[in-house]
Image (cartoon, rainbow, N blue to C red; front, side):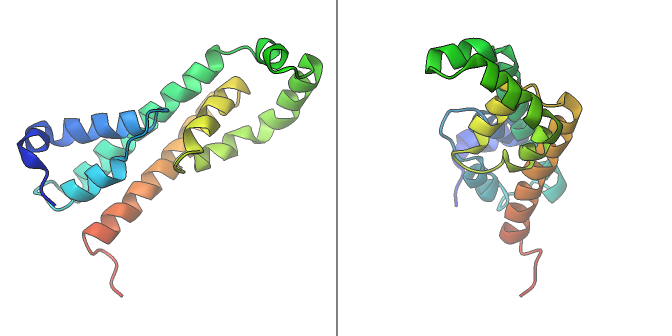
Length: 151
C-alpha cells in the first residue's frame, strides 16, 4: 500500500490529524491510514501513540460539543418532556462514562461521545475510558498489520 509523497511528508503529524478528523462526525477512516503507515518506517509505538492521541482528542472535542448543548432545549425541540429528559440524565450519569469505551465504534462512536457530553458524564472517567477504548482498537490494527500475533 503506497502512501504517496503527501502522506510520507506529513508522517506522524498527518496520522494524528487523520485520527483526529476520524473521531469527529466527518466520515473518515483513520484505520486505513494507520494500516498503510504500519507498512512504513515508523515505530509501532509512535504510530500507536499518534493515532490514539489524535483520535482521543477528536473524541473529546465531540464530548465537549455535547457539553455545550442544553438537554432542556433539545428535549423541547424534539417534543420530549424536559423533566423526563433531566430525570434520565440523572439516572444515567453515574454509569455514563463506561459508554466511552464504545466511542471507537464506527458510525455510533461519535454520537456516543456527543451524548456523553450532553448527559454531563464525569469528565475524567469519560476521558480515561475513551482513551482506553480507542488505544486498544489501534493496538489491534497494528498487531494485525505488523504480524505481532502468531497464528
